[in-house]
Image 1: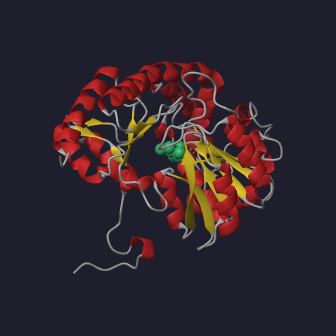
Image 2: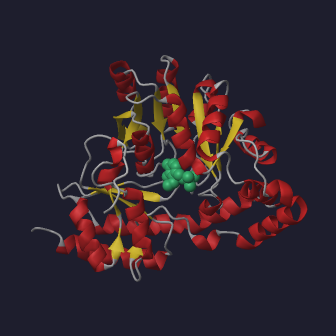
Image 3: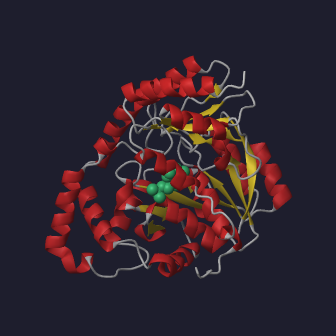
Length: 395
Ligand code: PMP
């Protein structure tokens, strides 16, 4: 007989795993996956990273293999501070190192939200943020977005109605839509937040991946906003997700709360990874690497967008200026969940849109990542998708 462990209400019954589902399709032989947000692995600079790991183990092995501080390695914090300072003046003690921005989202939720507290999110929003906010028992309320990103008037109305503690935004090359909040909207959002006591969690893992022009500056950099924003950055999309490193930029007593919570959850991010990545970043030009990432992804964005546009004349399709994702609304009342089954039978996968909503989902939506596959494979995958959409058509 299997012992029944107690489970939190969230995990009573069937446990949904939308992230696991998206990544699972990547391992199916022959399947072309547009489902997960997987960077192209050919970009990973394994040789230089190996040299940095070797160097750190050879010269500083005891420190690299020992416990460290919850805030993170001083050298990596200084490097992070100098990168963030391009937008917002930042000192190393305003940086909390995290295991990717996923942990950063969870830590911010842990320290700011009691069960039942409200956090506002874009509709649609990043699905694993929904999971993290669910895990702390927060109540999420979705705020309307359009082609320019979150609607500042809707944000103001939601703040007045729901009295949230915080708002979570992914304003640049957003996951899942690929949209970017315009500079004018950023100013309007800042104005709304400055007139309230609501904190901003600005999740910005894609901001450096602008294909056509640099992205508008983070909201955290607008006058008055730095002190009320937790700005989240990650090395996952610009370097390698496997090192699991990112950071939170913030000010004041919240930083101590974050460090203590980090200590309770994971003690610290792996010292070996932190030291090796700090060594790597000191000796290698990350900006030049990011330029190569953009060069590789831009034609893939073009191929994905053009292919979708030609294939789906009646659909709404976002044209991302950077990042990883196109967002499609079929606009025909069809539910993309059963369509995914047809697509997988045809040999292609996408992420159905329903799991990116905090509230009522728009079921005719889907997210497609254009970064994982080369242009010819994108074309092949879109051909398969066309077959699935035609087969799955009730008409
Ligand atoms: N935030 C957003 C908006 C993301 O798209 C992702 C990755 N899919 C993350 C956070 C988490 O990334 P990581 O933990 O690898 O930094």
